[in-house]
Length: 311
Ligand code: PPE
Image (cartoon, rainbow, N blue to C red; front, side, top):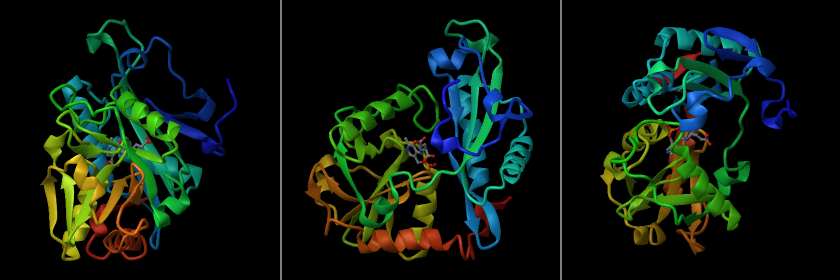
């Protein structure tokens, strides 16, 4: 086996099909259905080092989306939600991590190939590892330079976009490769209609005249859990949030502020799009207030206690 990526250094255990196995033993067959056809669903979740100890952010919502993602594929996850919760909590405890990223995945495993997955068994794994700021530490402060991708987001009439399915992430990989290849940090992907959808691994918010706008669920976006959290936090702060917006490409360039949300990306400001400076070309005041509110929850979750699952 090749050298272990730095990202997973120090990780001892992975949960696979009901067992805790050594990291090096968490392996599957090359003829696994999901490897050939992308027939898996996954989640990305963060556990934070909060004032009350390690706690998983919005665990229940991620768990719900995990099972919902599996539905269109008739993928029966052969574990109860409580079992996955117990496995995850136990894994974080064993690794003695205060904060980490959690990656549950369920997929059609090793069985007969052919498109119909009915005779392939469902396999489930959960891995945890430390994962810092997704787009870099200074991205959270200064913002990122992004480019509108030439790749369009697949339409929800082609593949359910509210399901977090492994295969369709090649769309995100293409957008990401293009953006970074051209010297940008991240992409913005338009939907088939040419309106703003999201980032390759983030939802997008736009600020104009003190109000927030984010593409609606019918714009071929993932129903992001950080997006939902930010909508709630912003409304609780008194902002008007248009959560069913249709945003044209041109509106990006004239926005007062833009920011990404996501489990990995958290709340990341966007400082330029296609080399056009957004606002003052750094983190804007509304983005700052929302980002601060978001991270302050880790110190004081008052009114949002149900968002945290203690480890
Ligand atoms: N859109 C896409 C396409 C997406 O992948 C994510 C999460 C989001 C929006 C935000 O959703 P949420 O995490 O529920 O707020 N992307 C995950 C994978 C990142 C990766 O590189 O892998 C994540 O942030 O965990």
